[in-house]
Image 1 (cartoon, rainbow, N blue to C red):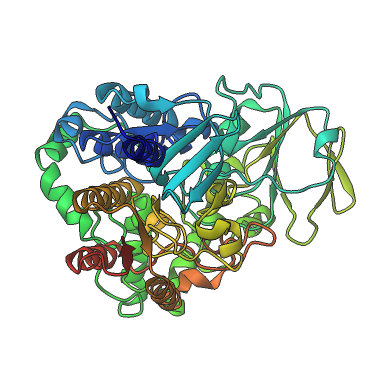
Image 2 (image 1 turned 180 degrees about the horizontal axis):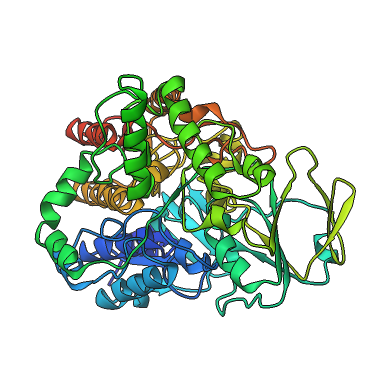
Length: 544
């Protein structure tokens, strides 16, 4: 017969044990791999996903022309060689539908959906200091407790809807590229406005223009785009890549962006005009993000960068027939300072009779009216308005959840002056909470899939280490965090990327602190740092 003391001990043990070992928020590529990896280690894991299926960013971004800007043979998982060998990509740059099919294939292959709770948007996550657990609540009121809590919500998943008066007064249809209807939109015969000229706009505008009776593009800032030169993949090339995937992946890990391409190891200032032009032309014809690899100092030296910018501006002038429109489409800032876009026939679209461009840099949109919008005192009438206004990048999805760490301090309060993390994985004062590709990690400056896998492996090893050592609490040390933030600021200041108003620094969100959020020191340096941290017994982390 149990004594009162024994019963009390059992009650305390039962109370102290959380329902789950790990709760993961988000069922994109990060959340799916986390589930697979942690479940394989024997942990009780639940993934909470706001959408109705897997895919993350690619679940929501279904706008016309949505396509990855990293070549599909590299934008894919590498943790399973069988998966690499069995899946066949069809195009150089995969479309959103093909990427979603890939995500579904992974979910089916590894039986992931049984541990994912769909249509479950997380509203709050509070740390219980006494019990050393996280309490997670969804908007529906469902509650979960877990020892470990991981935000795998992605860097570009919180749609930015500008605060323009009168949006609710518009009688037509309003769309946002980051929250596109899953059954698509038919613009045939419609008068359409597209607000924004970033990546999603550049991809969607040519296709919308083919359908619409008229398309008016409202541009605040012109952006650079390099032709994608997309094409169906040659089966022989696919077979060759699969035969050498191991070497290809290993070499890609040694590249600053985690993408395998050969940068030229020479300054743009070290060659004559003819050779410089030839190298730029070669990259232009090749297509894609590798254009910035034409020379080794395009993001380090203003004169070298100006050569590249002038080359692209001349291409725009050669392509767009109307000189005034061409000049409006020519960016004036540093090329590569904002994320370089990859397009198909974007500039050519402005030669169509049904397409026009309105510059709103000096005269912003004043109001959305019942029939359209007003800018510069002029009313424009439309049937549909498309907001291609991007995302509250890096921190948006994290801060939309009421996250509270030790002592009840909110993440929003801690990050009031900008995000502070250690390695982009943890933030001091929030024990047992991880982020996948959080601010302070290479993330959006790299091929996201390898960066996701590296973070997941690091997190899984942390949980495994703590379990093996009988530890229940892990958090970043403030001193280590401060040193990492200072290092990130220092290396960002060495490049031209930090010199313009981009979403990298949160400039597209009114009131957001201006901080260069991703780590720009390159993937190899980051991997070396992570390895060193582990080798020194998780240096910079406090375990107890």
